[in-house]
Structures are given as C-alpha cells and as structure tokens.
Length: 186
Image 1 (cartoon, rainbow, N blue to C red):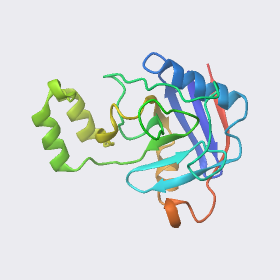
Image 2: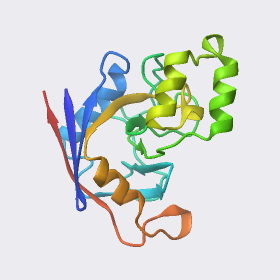
Image 3: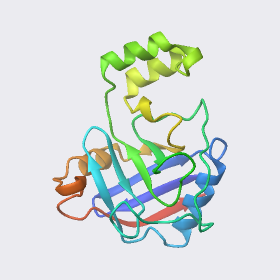
C-alpha cells in the first residue's frame, strides 16, 4: 500500500508498512481517506532532522487517532528512522494520535555511528543497520521511541525543499507548507 502526500510544494510518495505497524497504518490511511489531513500544515520543520504535521490545531498540541484515544507504539527491528522514514509523533510511550513526521536527516554524526557499532546487535544495532544509517542517513536515536510505518519512495527533493523553508518560533515555517491531500493507493 502506498500514500502520496500532496503538498503546496509538491508530492512525496511512501510505501506503508502495515506488517510492522498495522495500527499506525490503519490510523493514517483512515484519516487520509476521510480527509482529516486535508489543509493541515507542517507545523514544525527542522532542517537536517525532520518535518512534522498532522495536527488540526497547527500547534503540535492537537489531533487524535481514529479511535478517539492514544494508541500503543509498534516497534520492529526492520522499521528504522532512516532518511525518509514516515513515523508517528508522540509525547511519550504509547501516546500516538494523528501527528506524524518525516525524517530528513541525510547524515548520522560519525561519533554516533561509532557508538552504534560498539553497541552492536545486542543493543539493537546490527552491522547491516549501522551500514544502512551510514549510507542513507537518519535519526537512530528515535528508533524504538517512535513507530515507523512508512518509507519514502519518491519525492526526496520535495522533502528537502520543505526542510529548507524559513522558520520562526517553535520551528514553524514562516509561510504555510500545506498538506493539500493524502492519497492512499492499494
């Protein structure tokens, strides 16, 4: 299943991972099909980190799941916060609602990569994962804190352009970056 996030700056396409995160995918796709995200903004943009949206208040303080309450985290060793990961935003364990973010970090600091190599597979960072972070970039410190439910497959230029917008207080873009619609393709 795919999701196309259509913005006023272009489209980004994602492969959704309903095997690793079935509830997060169900929540996101149901909201998308119901038009919940239409017209909402990316309210938080931090270059070389991530862009965040999905809050109807546009403040980072609102939004709810399709069930009307928070839902639990879904972590998988195969779903990581690499560059282009589509992940649930939260305010702590098991507090998922409607907000999501897209990882835009293209590099992982070398000292962190070294630490990940030392931690190794026992600590959740086998060699292939470290190599993938080294190659793709991302935010490994968010693994097992934020549910990853999708991967960018097209539109990296749009993601990077959004990440480059001027921001003001609370990392909010000076000019709205609008989610016009999210199309779900089965």
